[in-house]
Length: 381
Image (cartoon, rainbow, N blue to C red; front, side):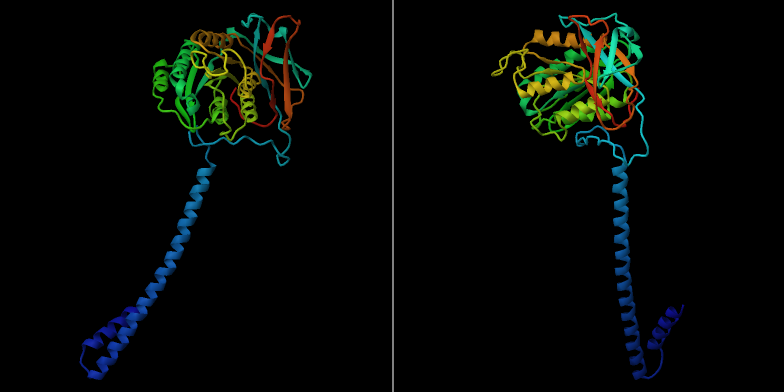
């Protein structure tokens, strides 16, 4: 109030009667007063700008921390971060409730053997026999969730049409009429979920047909890790990934072969692979269809076998169809065995699993995942 009275006083004085010298003196005082106001406002604005900058910085920091704390979704930008072994900071021991094993038995002709019962199997973990708690056979008709991952990197550019036809043929072959669901994704320098789990073949056909130009890298192991971690762990029933690829990661992935095997075992995901390195004619240099001839082939074979699946090295349409038929038969004739480990602590150790037939039948082969890492994890049953 005093400020405005003072301002009014000086204004009136400069306009009123009085001596010329007095009016001149008052004008000088008013000018000084105006200058004081300008400097005051100037420094006040500087102070407000500093406070505003601090407020905006704090708000941006809070938003970034909030975004970092949110769970990530499957996308082409995300890179996998393999889970760490639990540390001593955890409060008390965490106990393993149940291990679930998809088991397939094959004869000498690699045909699935059905009709077995719980008493036909023995389970060993780290060479210690385990008690089988649960048993399910093909008659229980659990839903199967199949993810088809297709390599669209530059190394398969000349075989892209072949891979597209392979993907569609497999989807037609494996998809059941009732509960089964199929998802479709591609990987090159990006990992793209093109169709989430569905039983609608027209949507899957469209997703496969809409693939564009090949990419310039192969994030093979990243694709396995990311899909297992973000999609497979949350679905019920059997979990299966079928990869159509030439098998060469070229060391572009952040995840390693061991990481891919680990996450597949922990999410109880079985991996099958169809190698397209020979295309449809088997004419790739140094490649014969059906053979394992390189370190890349051996890594692909290891990825599948340690998760309970198989790798197929096809070179013509007939072999390709046989591979799809074998995968489909395996999925329809799988036994599910469950047990609670005698060593029931999540201590980060590598556990080795072996499943045998009780009567030691000759000529039969038992396939299942070969182990898992005992770490605390969430998994839908």
